[in-house]
Length: 356
Image (tube, rainbow, N blue to C red; front, top):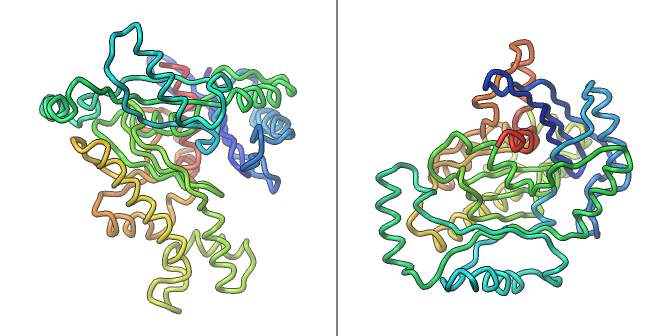
């Protein structure tokens, strides 16, 4: 049994996967919401003291007995970057990586846990012929003097804080993973090529370019679904509850009758402009690769009109990311699960790590 726990700013999502006869089965899931801040943006350690208690209660209420789990930490607390390192003899290469990584970390390198891997652009191509072609161009364009490295780093302070909060409730963390990596696993594991993933959370949104081979670009912006809800509430002078309902039922069309762009125009423009910026950053670093599609994730992914608006603005195909592909579940929960799935993507990716 594999348990994935995704702690957001105001909710906890949990998924239980089991493997039987080579089939991965979704055995259980839950989404627990709270008015309290579980993740304290900008504060040391990030996760609140009482989060462990909420997770324990949620597990008990869902009838989940396991005390061991894989847990996500927010991208904004971590570091995922690509850097260029001189291609020097192996015995000195790791030291060269360490020196280069230290330039991007605002604390002493001994205060972080980090890992790295060499990026081979041919791995990220969408088909075998394209892979060979792009690999040849990569060799010509970049030469063998520099190597592109993907670096993932987590501060030890944050890792230790999560361990403390969970262990206080008798819970064990088997794997602590950056949410972007879990999300990438969930949405691209069965896909070829490179995808832009837009994960709109409650307070922040993650924008990443990735494939089943890893993350190439990772960015976080301080705009999420709550900003949209507040924009509607302020414009229409209604409660946040009513604004949330309007966002869910009318989506980007809320307030269009009062103006050509509607009440969400400012917030959506910020998000879409950041998506465009991410695409440009990707092109500047990986000009041999192309983005196949935009995959939407998070509770706002199903917002009416969002997919078509992003497609219009970016010129890319846009769809809702499907983390349930290849996962079996009982038919009785199909409807409720498909509605909840965009919010469960990270938790599903965490649980899937158990079977790698």
